[in-house]
Amino acid sequence: MPLTDQLQNILDSLSGVGAEGWLALAFCGLLIAELVLLRRGNEQQTRPWLTGLTVFGLLIAGVITIGEPFRGPLFLNLLFLDNQAILIKGVVAAGAIAVVLWETGIWQGNDQQQATAKRQLPTEWYAVLMALVLGLFLLSMAVNLLSIYLSLELVSISSYLLTGLVGDRKASEGGLKYLLFGAVSSAVMLYGMSLLYGLTGTLDITSAVFGIELAKNGSIALVAGLLTMAGLLFKLSAVPFQIWTPDAYEAAPVPVAAFFSIGPKAAALLVLMRLLSAMPVAGLQTPLAIVAMAGILIGNLSALRQTDAKRLLAYSTIAQAGFLLVGVVALSDAGFQAAIFYMATYLFISLAAFFLIDALAPAGSLRIADFAGRMSASPLLTVCLVVVAIALTGLPPTVGFTAKVLSFSALFNAYQSTDNPWLIWLFGLGLANAVVSLFYYIRIPFLLIFRPLPDNVPVVPVRLTVAQWVALAITVPPVVLLFVKPDLIMRLIATF
Image (cartoon, rainbow, N blue to C red):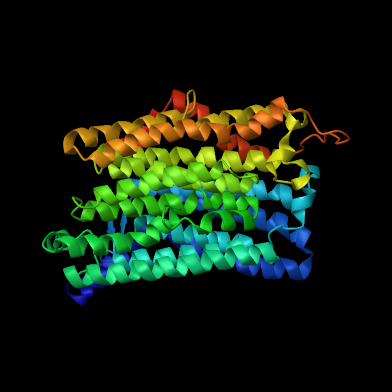
């Protein structure tokens, strides 16, 4: 392509990255605003301004994304903007807004959160979160091995910082473990990408040459593809790259852990599906089925033994990553659409679970045994937690049931067309583990409702800020509403 055409393509592509440009400006603006505001007042006076600026920046990014008129390749096929990318960017922006709103209750020092206030995030976290969202926006559009790697590294570095930003020993340990496992998975992924480039001579996974050349190389292409997926499976908390998850979630403050449960997973899932669509997939279905089975089994069995609520949710996300991959394993349009629906609805379920457990935790303690008899502190929040636990299990009348039905239906249809025995094993094991998960998802609601409050322990009513109630209003009602009206999301997915 002539240089003038390349320059014109770059100029034309600017109209498709308005949200990303805004997020970059917002990141710089937050850094400057923090420095200026801290010079004029203390940290508690600065936080409301930074919270408002962050929510405003994320809202504007979401509005720009929804109104984006451009569709197609950007910057000489480094990025690709389509309806899938727009949906994932909307999921990421909504999740980020919810966690910022929830974090306000920690620095305002509500009674039930006094113990966690000592581990409140420093003011730098707003800018780092904005950088993480920017990385996820770029990752959702990445269709070039180079852009995939750079976007994933921006996401990873921001995640490492958020995990250890509190600065105490637990946070430092969790952040270091996250960094070490992330570095290994990035190295493996980069090696796989180098093999793919060597086999195809191109970094563009949408190029026809990419698929044709890989089809000629059989087993080598299969190995290269599996190595490349390492970084994406790491972000999904999928086996065997899940080891970091419990320690990082336990070390990170609740808002950060809540965002980790949905943000990176949403973008990584979309890139994984795009990569599979560009590769010969005949040999990839069985390894992916084994990864999904292992994630479901390890996540659920490990969660049964947990005594800490945040670690329980961490192992839950490992199991949910396996369920997310069920639709992907089908390697069909119906399976991919089911996986996207699962991811979009998991946003509401996962965030609501983290928020409600944090709200109902007695004096900041997240020990599961300490939740006994706490229903009287807030009957409404307890009922909400019961609904969310049912959704995580995948039972009606919640959208978790709809998501699992769509995923397993696509998997069964794939089995009928391929007769791959691993698919029916995944089908049976997945359904059996959905029942197993009921035992640990219902444990906290059971303690809240049916176990007495320990002697000489006063009941302190849960008091949330207005912003926290808004965060719950964003996340809890859709858990039931989308079961009744799943077409609210399915209409968007059907246009892909």
